[in-house]
Amino acid sequence: MAVEDVKIRLEELTTLLNDYAYHYYVLDNPKVPDAEYDRLLRELRTLEEANPELKQADSPTERVGGEPLDSFKKVQHDVPMLSLSNAFNETELRDFARRAQQGLGYEPSYICELKIDGLAVNLKYENGLFVQGATRGDGTTGEDITSNLKTIPSIPLKLKENVTIDVRGEAFMPKKSFNRLNEAKEKNGEALFANPRNAAAGSLRQLDPKIAAKRNLDIFIYSVGKVENNELDSHHEALSYVKELGFKTNKETQYCETIEDVIAYCDSWLDKRTELDYDIDGIVIKVDRISDQQKLGFTAKSPRWATAFKFPAEEVVTTLEDIELSV
Ligand SMILES: NC(=O)c1cc2c(=O)c3cc(F)ccc3oc2nc1N
View 1 (cartoon, helix red, strand yellow):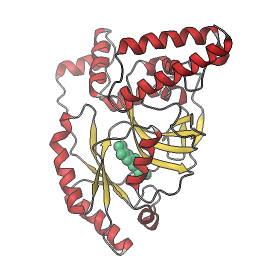
View 2 (cartoon, rainbow, N blue to C red; view 1 turned 180 degrees about the horizontal axis):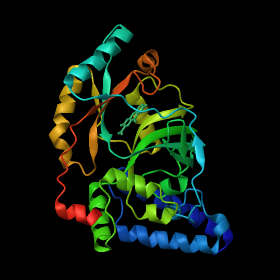
View 3 (tube, helix red, strand yellow; view 1 turned 30 degrees about the vertical axis):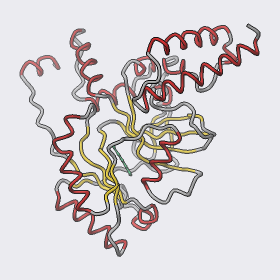
View 4 (cartoon, rainbow, N blue to C red; view 1 turned 90 degrees about the horizontal axis):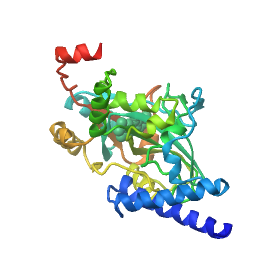
């Protein structure tokens, strides 16, 4: 094949495979059978090996992970990644709403999101390309784990618009992947991970990205950091915007007009969460209007316009056998 034709075919395959991966991993709605995806990926890999200079920045072959790092670089967050205050019962939820109402002079509307129990990360895109991913760290300085995050199929390597944007989300390990990983570890006599959150954090802190690539990690994007498009007047519009860009957002997110609706939503998930195929440790409640968020501002370490309703910790029944295993 002439080089020009190789370039066209290679770009065609990259676009096609990324679209198939988007439908499979972000929309949970496969477009083609796995065998068809694998056949095209093999064709792309062959063309890239013969023409490495033609490999696209957003090639799906990036997902297998490159060479191990010696260490993680430090990253300064442009916008600090703060932590959420907690509310442990309905009274504390109502206190949060009362403080918001006092600060605004009226009762705001809210957005409720499942509080994914994973690892908070910041994703940086320049002109639509994924250029850096970092952990929260101490809120100001995190670790550059770009090479590991590139292996997560639901993190787009190229956005549907060429925008420069920072987004935040929670990387996590689905329960099924966690159970499979611990079964494999048990067979090898290795120490088990205590829960999916530790397993996700442990996987993303590996210096060898080929390990992260095998851990079936996933992500939900829950907020926008720095962004060019400042027509976003509410949090729910920001979530629709990042979804349009190609990010994975959580379909259980709910707009709530009043704190009564918020409390009903929190109550509804206390027992339902066992049906989810990922762990949640509560519900995140955010004042929806951006102007209201700006009026309420932040304390030294948390936004005043958001809080986390925490579920009671699930009693973990540790049998004697488990204790022996983890020794
Ligand atoms: N684990 C989560 O699913 C989740 C976590 C956060 C945060 O930690 C968080 C921290 C802030 F300072 C502000 C907003 C936030 O929104 C968030 N939204 C979520 N859905």
